[in-house]
Length: 182
Image 1: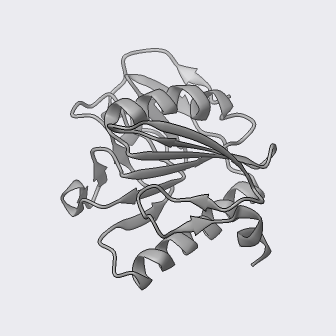
Image 2: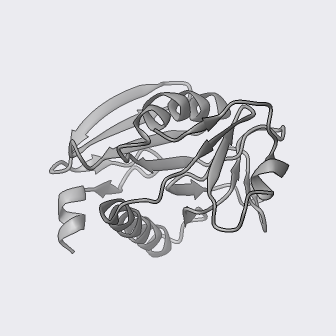
Image 3: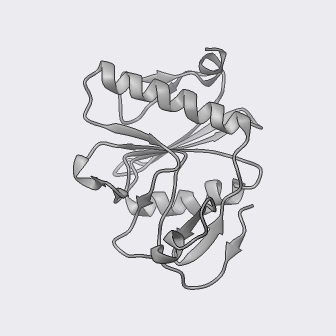
């Protein structure tokens, strides 16, 4: 699990970290981030590529960003996250620093040390911040949890072998096993 540094930190403290040190800030608590595994990075690369290709081929307005990409979820200086993949459809949220506000779709790839953060802390934070869709991809268990937030909330679980419908794009489906074979 990422180590938390209990205190009342702000985004300024994140920017003051030593060069190369990565951390996230949630409600004033800093969580150190461990380096990702090869499988983690492979999944981020493949998913980012297929999402970007889908958006481009369909002339979509959304943009996809892999980590490290700054997301300032709240209107305060107490929360700064770097989701593994962020899809933002409102261009007004984007600036040179990153995304100010909730992305439309976030994907987190679970690492052994990030389970509690991805399954609990970030799930709650993303839901309350206004993220429309949240995927938790767990390579160890070869499963994907899909949360749809908003007026009609829903939750589904898929295996890597299944076609996963993308909630923000009605015609788009992703099969993780097929993606990893490419």
